[in-house]
Image (cartoon, one colour):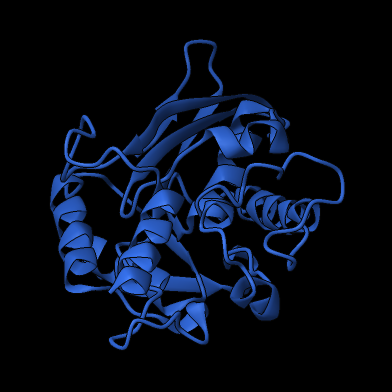
Length: 240
């Protein structure tokens, strides 16, 4: 689908999704050893399917995900029946904390608000990945995708932290807005960017929709932020 801005610029669109619901706590109530490999829960699969049905008329012509299983599984459910190849890319995997650091956390507020200092120079996620370094990795990969002119409408399925970085790119705010953006599971964001028709230079970027969840459009059913939900599940298990 070709889009043209009022001034004649070429308008391209990114539908940016977070993966569906997962659980980082096993059946015995322990934190999983490797959060990278967790699959979607039944609810997560339902979320993705509902999202796909709501967007069934969107003319996606390219689909990229992170290489983590939960992102690939979400993309398959959202894009089911389209025959579109899904391209998993390591560049869009989620920020990773240091397991020893994470296991030593005793105050669950440090889980619920672990993105609060992302904007500070040198800040790391739970003693692991540098926010600045991951931002550089993600935006570089995003700009590589944008430099490939063949697509008009991209489905990008990633993670809460990665989505915040892409949205920061769209807003021109970088890490300064990182902790102020929430991303619920299976949410969709819509980003348009306009290119000069001759030079292909990006002349504007616009966030058209943010954190839309088709299963709960006005957030009536869930008042907790995404990281608060993770902390709440850990708290329930610890109490039990």
